[in-house]
Image 1 (cartoon, rainbow, N blue to C red):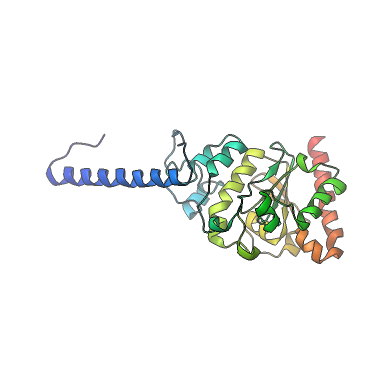
Image 2 (tube, rainbow, N blue to C red; image 1 turned 180 degrees about the vertical axis):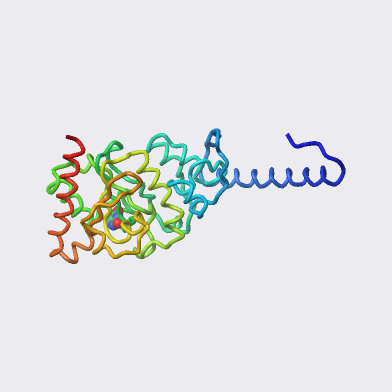
Length: 265
Ligand code: URA
């Protein structure tokens, strides 16, 4: 409750409160238009109003500001207890400029308890049309790596991308698009908690590791992603153009298989 003060101060506080209420109303209307129908429950310690992706948010937690940010467009996503809830929280997403060009939002596919999670860049044409990651030519090669190389079924692993909507003409995702979408990938990883993440290609690797180093320097060695082992390797689309480097990817995948053996021993 506001302390009762006199005259000008009290009027000022009323005006401030009324501004706050109309800001909140506009925000809730915006949420409803974006398909977000459920509001998160507040929790003790919720204080943050930091922008998602802002320096304060990033320094305080690894979910990029999802936590405790009751008024953010990501609050319902943070509260999600399952991949289904997360997908519902994303809704008919219009958080970045890619939405008008998409056919489908490509969320991710596979085992919610997967030990291995593959992370690519973003949907291409086939993925946009089918609503599933890695289903085009590069996807076929990834499926071969998973099935013929690793001995898993595609549905045993989890496959997702850094961004969920196809950029026009398959251009590289832009920083504001990554900033808008990456919290969802982080939440997917947090829900799945795989033993190993395989990051496919320069874009996914550099984004996840927050590094500018070339993939040739990063691949083939273990990195830490918030307590999860991360193996960077070449993107299957790159391998289609440079089949000679398939042997390097196989070296990386063998390390992943060895790690899984150790982890489940
Ligand atoms: N390339 C990617 O990075 N992801 C896909 O889903 C398809 C192609």
